[in-house]
Amino acid sequence: MSAVASRADRTEDFWRGRTSVEGPRATRFHAEHDAYDVAAIRASVDGAEGVRVLDLGSGTCVIASRLVSELGWQVHAVDYVAEFLERAIDDPRLTTAVGDVRYYEDAGDYDLIVSLGVIMYLLAADDRSAMYERCARMLSAGGTLFLKAQFGVEAEVRVDQYSEALNADYCAVYPQLDTEVARISAALGPVAVLDPYPPELNPYPDTHVHYVIARH
Image 1 (cartoon, rainbow, N blue to C red):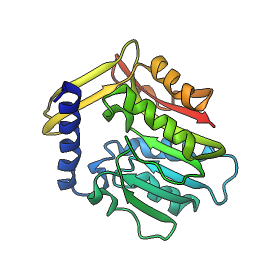
Image 2: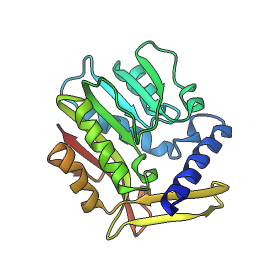
Image 3: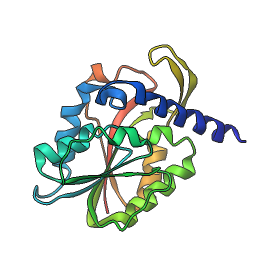
């Protein structure tokens, strides 16, 4: 088994272990991000009616549920941990499917694909590139990919260690921003990079959270 495969297995073990955490924050670590993220997702779409959304790696559906309840959008939420999806609100406009973002693809025709804090756990760059290519196929003409991630400022940053804060082994990769933007652009075309948070929400010198938005 390769080192990347071994780390990927431990990453999946980490997330499945988070099912023991009560409440939606099992996957949505930072409540202070939510208002910024919902507002930015809303602003990324032209028009507000009947928006069809795919949430890739939705976790406990915190944002998916808000897009439905607050904006009235139709959201299909996908995560590979079925227990997380059970925490979605009960609303016919919110549907769910168990699926791995490394491989998931459906009939598509979405106006918007959202993926928040997911690509850091796709440790192989080829998996991330393949995901962007599938997003391009699932978006309608003029559709938008809205991606949020923690990126390496000057170089890719890898974490593979025990986390005392999370009480678990933790593996993640924070891709170097310009390199990852090039991967996204290769699949979807020109992108916009936004710096959404105040400095206190970006405390690390070697990584920084950005939104990357691509219109297909």
